[in-house]
Amino acid sequence: MKTRSTLNALIGVWFIIAPWVFDFSDQTGALWLSVVFGIIQIIAAWWGYDKPGWNSWQNWVSVITGVWFVIFPYIYSIANEAVWSSVILGLFTILFSLWNLGSNSSSKAVD
Image 1 (spheres, rainbow, N blue to C red):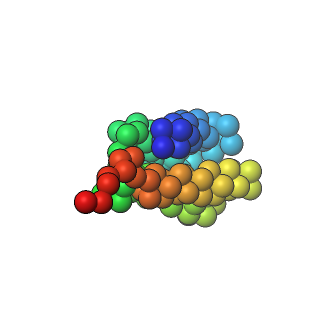
Image 2: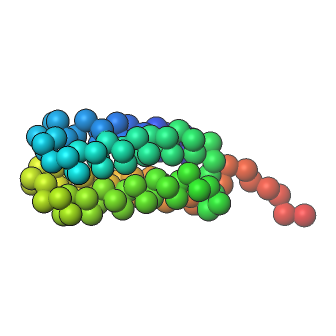
């Protein structure tokens, strides 16, 4: 679980720097939403670092940021390289977050 949360946080870092890497920093809306959602993803990933299970709202926030990054390049008509990066990393974020949600760190014995 901790590895998946760390990977989600690193993906968030990527989305903070992506506007300059893919040269869409001149699109103010795309720039700020990429940075803000990247920061949200980092915070949610670190805050949910040790909180598995379906009641972990932090991992649900990461699912939402992942969905956002899948649809984001289509809303702002971002270039092809950025589309693939955003969609693939958004899908990984969703996958890792759902995996964390389905995890159960404590195995309780049935009485």
